[in-house]
Every structure is written in C-alpha cells, then in structure tokens.
Image (cartoon, rainbow, N blue to C red; front, side):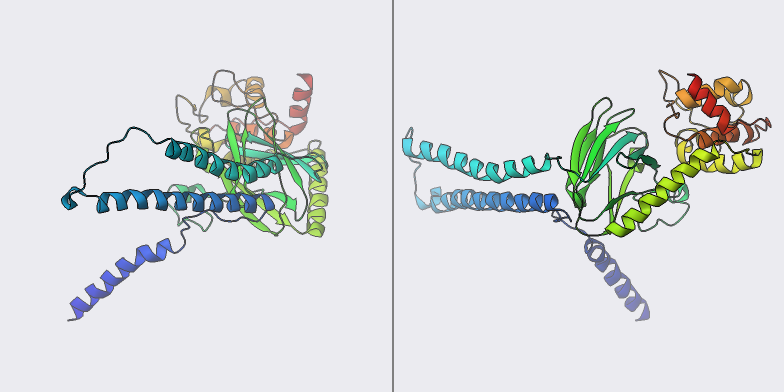
Length: 374
C-alpha cells in the first residue's frame, strides 16, 4: 500500500508540474508601463476581437450551411453564376473594417515616431555583444555587458532568477521624462527591444534610428537584442532602471564624477599587479566570449592567445590589433569600446596570463599617446 501511495503522490506531483510551470506563462501581450505600450496593447486587443467576430461569423455561416444543407437531407447545390449585391458587400465591408483599424493604428504610429521635445537624449550603440549608452546632454557614457556567470550558461551552476537578462551596467533614466534614443550599431545589425516600453528599434551600422519613451513607473525593465547578430546573440540583454527624478540626478552626478576619475587614472603610475587585476576583469567582460576565459580561443575564427605570437612578441603589433582591430577578421577595434586604462590592462593581462609570463606591461599613458598619434 505504501508503494502505491508513493506512486500516486509522484504521479500527482508530475501531473501538477506543467500547471505550475504554465501559471507564469502569458499567452497575450502585456499592457506595459508607457503610454505607447498601452496604445499598442489596446490596438492589439481591438483588432483581435474584430478578427474573432469575423471568424465566428464566417465559420458559423460555413458550418451551418454544411450541416443544414447536407446531401442526406435531400438538398441540391444551387446553380447560379454571380450576385452583384453580395460581391459589392464583400468588397465594401472589409474595406470599411480596414479603415476602422487603420485610423487608430496610424495615430499610434505617428505618436511613436514623434521624438521632438525630448527631455533627455541617449545614444545607443550595438556592439558584438554589448550595448553602449552615451548621455549626450551630460557628456558621459558606458558599456552594458551581460553579467550572468559563465558557469550558469555551462550548466555548472544553478541558473539565477534573471538568467541571461542581467547586466553589469543598466541603462538608467528618470521617471516621467521623455527620453529620446538615437540607435545605431558599430559592427552588424542589432535591435534594441524593451517590451514593457513598447519600444523595438533596429541598430544599423551607418544609420541612426530614433525612438522615445516616457516611463511613469519606477522599476527595472528587461529586454534583449532581437536581431541575430552572431554567436553571442542570445547573451546581449537590455536592462533599464527607471529612477525617481531626485535619485536620477544623484546618479548622474556620480557618473560624471566617475568619468572624471577614470580620466585621471590615465596619468597614474600603475604596477604590473594592478594592471593584471583590472585586466582580468576587463578581459572576461570584453574578450572571453571569443578567445575563451583560458585564452585557448576557438580557432580558426578566434585564435588562441595562450602562447600566441601576438601576445608574446611585438608589443606595438599587440597594441595596434587591440585598439584598431583587424580588417577581414572577427577581431573588433576596441579603441572606442574600452578606456585607456582598460586597454592597457587587457594587453598587459594577455601578455602575462596563462603561462605567457612575458613580464611586460603597457601603461594607460602609452595607450593614450598611441591613440593620439594616429
């Protein structure tokens, strides 16, 4: 009896699991937290119910006709060629329905594309595989990278609540302000998407697309890149933190201070140990996706750095390829992606990690001078 009881409990648990899992699923769009997203949701529901009514009427008449005029009841098919009234009706009625749907849809689209009179302008640049946010009005910016540990991705660690949807530096905007986004890309096509805002805009190299949002509820909102952009496409989340206006002002002041401190660090006298410590963090964020955390790479597209010629020999060539990239390969130019401090730290780390042990280092001041000489 105990065995049967245990089996019954296990069966009940197994049957209830899908229901529990699906309890978090939503089969419909969500209204979101902006006026735009609410308008989109209202349009969606309006058009959905119009389609439902049309479907019920059309299929209702069809199935009724099939059932009521079946051959077993002795009905014979009508024999006529045309009916002008019916043809006019099934042309005019769909046209009217489309016009009824198009009027509010057009108004919503016009509103979505109206980026004038913004309070804050932020340039968003897509890179493989990260986002750069530049606050044009306040003259500072930073990169946003996925912060989900690689051990979770490789199933070596239990996955967190926001698996693949967490970043080191979220985009921060104030509540209740119109924020204009200038969206572009540095390498391939990306797409910046935050469903709660009703915002999705392609990031295309050489083009700047505009969109905007005004969020009325403080909180953290998550999205993703929605344009296939390479091997790490699934690891390119978007996180936006919306703060009350006073907290946002304090955050902006902190960012300006941090940017100034970063500029001052360029002139600091760094030790090899300090650069190695910072370089490891910068490498894991910017380089490990291609060259792997242990420097083994993924040849032939992403060559190994461990024991490689570029990391062991000519320092000038090493600096050049990190700063300027290499045309015709997957090696990006990191000169505009990393600060002088991080560039120096990464190069120093690559020349002394994984047994390379050259003992050589490059300083942020040398990187600064190199970039200014180009």
